[in-house]
Structure formats: structure tokens, C-alpha cells
Length: 300
Ligand SMILES: [Zn+2]
Figure 1 (cartoon, protein in one colour):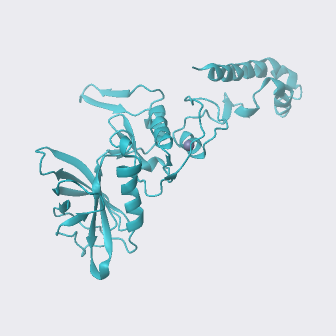
Figure 2: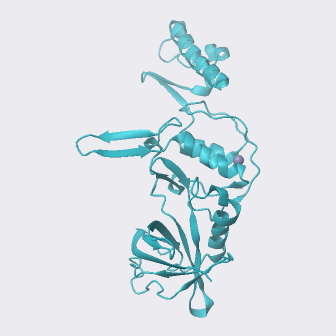
Figure 3: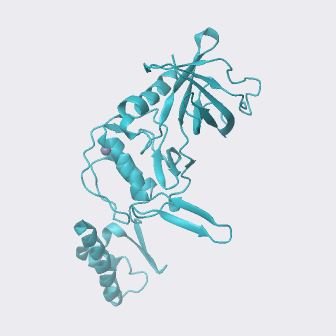
């Protein structure tokens, strides 16, 4: 049986007297050919919360001299344990989406379980550390290429993930037959330019009907998948819904069409009773937006 031992680590601020278990934790389910003993040291809080405490630490595997950077997600301090949800999440990594491990979802080192008082089973899910969660879609780049920032004085170099790469990673999960189930920027990380989807506790089987390509800056349109649509909104892939013309007036982008020009002019009557004076300007704006639509329609 493969087992895990946790080095000493801090307890959540509102549960200071409860300490992490020091004994061996048994690995959930998987029949591993050779039993292994893992050890995780240098545990530090990443998320200090009694409901879901998340640690960062260094994993020592018996046959590997290198230490792996991992996160440990646990419900050990929670009042309500989530054994089923965490077993489901481990199954997602190790069984259903195993081919995506290390690509668009973290590599999973296993789910380890601790039997406490009254046979309460708490869970410790050990995953590859896929670094920081995306806080703001504006930190992502637009294309498939990486973004870079240079601070020449300090020689700081960072690669940012791109919106399309993140969308593509989610599409890969859908093509493998599952939704993420709890999509938010908080559940997408950026590991040196590679986006990863984490927290698969509520992933569900899914048959993705989406077949069209989506481009950054495209006008929002109906696509055949709700979760991909949500992802496009979270990652700010769709064009802004409003077109602001020099702070003078704001049009809904969806209305900017050739057949709507008289309607658009009627919206400007409070600027000038003779709305015809705006006609050349509105026509020019509509042509610009229609040209953008045409461009996206023809995009390869
Ligand atoms: Zn889908």
C-alpha cells in the first residue's frame, strides 16, 4: 500500500489546537504495483481556511532524489468532511482525465486518507503545484503566443498565459468528455505561461457540441456550449458589449448593423433634433463594426 507522511505544518488560524496527523496516510483506491512511501516537508499555508486548507510543500518520493513542489488540499480541519467530493476529484485526475495531467490539469500524486475519531475519513489530495491563480483576466495575453514582461533593472522575466491557450485547455477537458463544473478565475492557474484548471470536485460528464473556432475580440455570439461561453466571459475573450464613441454616446455593439442606421440615428435625437448631421459618422462606425464581423467570419 502506498502511503504518505506529512511533515509538521501550521494549523488554520481559527483551529490552532488541531494538528495535522503525523501517522501514515493510506492512498485511496489505486492499485499501485509497488507500495511507495511518500513524505511531504516544508508545509506552508497557501489557503488558510478551515473548510478547505491548502498547503504548499516539497514531496520526497523514495525513488527520486529530486523534491517535487506540490500542493496538498485537505478537508481535515473542516466541520463537514467531503470524502465523496475529493474521491471524485481524484478520479477525475487519475482516471477520467488522466491523459491531460501535467498539460491542462495538475499531475496528481494521489489522494490520501486519514481515519479519525468515529471513523471520520478526512482527505489529503496531493497535486503538482501549478502556481498562482489568475486574479484578473487582464494579466492574460490575447494570442496563442506567450506574453513577456521585462524589468531590465532587476532582470525580472515572466511569461503570462494567453486567453486562447486557457480556452483551449478547457476545450480539451470538454473533448475528453467532462465539464469543469465550477468555473471561475480562481480555478485557473498560470504556471509560467501554461494555464491549468484546478478544483475538479464538481466535474461532470459532458458531450461538447461546440465546433466553431473562437477568436479574442470577436463579438459575442451563440455557441453550443454554456461552460465555454462562461469561460469566454471570464477570460474577457468577447468584444465589449458597448461601443463608446469618444464619450459622446454609447451604442450596443449588437445594434451596429447596416439595417439599423435609421434606428441608431433616432437614438441621437437628444443631441441634435436634426439627426441627419450624424448620418455620415454613424455609417462610418457601422461599416467599421461590420468589417470586423466579416473579418471574424472569414478567419481561418
Ligand atoms: Zn462543451
